[in-house]
View 1 (spheres, rainbow, N blue to C red):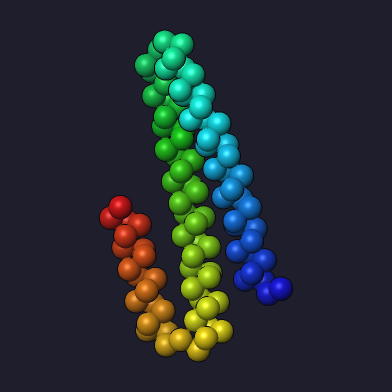
View 2: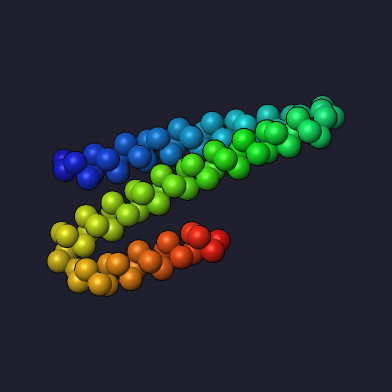
Length: 96
């Protein structure tokens, strides 16, 4: 297994772990709302979830970059074409 594939796999595991943690946080927020907790406390937790999602997004983007690079090297894809594809994804990430 190449270093790139190992790194992609490590990122995947990391993101899955983060998503499970985020899922738990969201369930906690639901419970807080149902229990009538203070809005300020709920908003703090929502901000934490948003931050966790942003961190996961960065890792997902990094994994995509590694994958695109590895595929372009394996397939002999024109580097301009691979770069254009990556820029389209990155632009969607920034704008979305």
